[in-house]
Each structure stands twice: as C-alpha cells, then as structure tokens.
Image 1: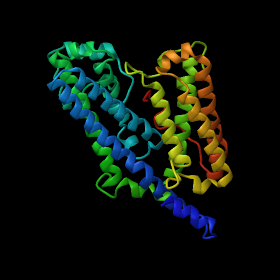
Image 2: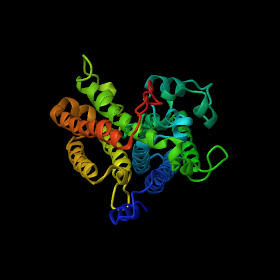
Image 3: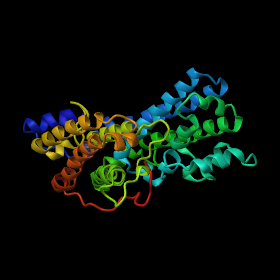
Length: 342
C-alpha cells in the first residue's frame, strides 16, 4: 500500500518508485472509483425502470437519489481521465450539456426508436447522458405526470442503460482487460508509459476548467459578460456537489484521501504535501460554504462563490508550478480541448 511506501522512505529504505506510486493510486482510488461508478450507474438504470413501472413520489425520489450518486462518482473520476475514458470519449455518452429542445423533439417524433442502439450511437451527445436523465426527472412532482407519457419514460430508461453499459466497459478496461490485452491498471502503473504526466495534466486542466471556464465565466471575471450557462447544473441544482466531488478527485490524485491513500504525495515530499493538505482544507471549507444551487449562489451570494474560486485557484497555481516542477511533468494540451464535458 501507499502508506507502506511512505514509511519505508521515512525509515531510510529509499524513495518509492514512480511505478509503485502509480500502482497504488490505481489500486487505492482509480479502479475503485470506476467500480463505484458502475454500481451507481446500474442502480440508476434499475431505479429508472422501477419508476416507470410504478410512477409515485417514492420511486421518483429513489431515481433522483440514484442520479445524484452516479453523477457524484462520475465527477470524482474526472481527475483521472486517462486511458480508456479518453480513447472511448466516454463523456459523450455519460455527461454533456444537453439541449432540452432537441430532447423534446425526439420524444415527440414517434418514428424514432428510443432504444439502446439509437441512444448510444445515433443521436447527439447533447441529447443523452446524465444531463438528459436530470432533465427528464425534473425538480418537482409534476415530473410524474410528464413521465406518464410512455416515450418519455422509455427515453429515461434508455439513457440510463447507455450510461450503465459505458460504466461496465470502463470498469472492465481498468480491472480486467484493455483492448484484448492487460488491464489498463497495469499499463497505468508502467512509469515509462507517460500516464504520470497525463494524470498531472488532467488534474491541472480540471482545476483550470473549474476556476476559469466555469466559475470564472459565470462570475464574469474571465470574460466581458457573466454567463451562468458556463455552469452545467440542471434541474437538480447539483453544481456545488459537482465542485465538491471533483475536488475530492484532485485531492485523491495529489495527496490521497486518508492515511492509506497517499496519491502522488510520496513523490512530492513532506513540505509540498503539507501545504497542499492545508490548501485543500481551505478549499473544501470554501466550497461547502456555497449554498446550492450554484447558479443562484453566483447572483445571491457572489462573494462566497468568489472565495471558493480563489481557494481552488491556489491549488491550481501550486500544481502548475511546484507539483509540475517537482515531478518534471511536461504540460501539454488537454485531449478534451474544445469539448464541453462536465
């Protein structure tokens, strides 16, 4: 485990290898995160089917809870979008800002089958995924009346099936076999493969997306005009949860989530690790002070959102300067540049 590697170094046994640190990160965080994402996605599929079989307040609440869980596990995975998720461009199936009018057009057009094949490969990314499920489940009891329309329920179940299938493939890629060969966990742990650079780049790009593309644009500090559309929140108003969960993912990569989950900290040294620990504590406190929904908070409690952005920005700067320098990482361009996935 990562703790053993840290203790060994502290006792004079030498610094842990990059391969061992990457292997621990995969075993302690990445593989379990994709496994949890798969379990949560199956639960969403089951709850969507149960809802459509029995439309009532309880089944609607269960489906919304399942949606929140799978959205959280997907958000926690974003800091480690290397390998299969990038090759498969999974975000196009799982989460993309949706076009509500186009979803309604699909529901109205009875000539279009709303089955797995159509929803997974023959419609746009902005008509499926977690955003589509969020839209279909709505935010009030009126969603029950809307879901009484059979095609709307069929759409919801089909979208959930697509997410669950993609989650199953990602888990298998990491834990069983990738492209007919070794599991990606083993490829990731190979220090010569370049995934250390990729995962540090991913954490940096994610922090930049949060602070600049999302919060920065929503607040109007990165553009001439503020744009709340920069925050992909949906009827569930889960923008603050998204921030918190993605920050958990970044923390897991950099310093771990507990005594036995050290992330990359064995390679960073005690001083830098401790400063990151303190920066994450401030950032989590600042994010948790924001009252959801996030779009409303940007207008109603702007200073609180600014403080959350500033706290995350401190971590971003530390990664861009000290972490990158300590690890000798080359900063490149995001494989998702130009995409609007969240």
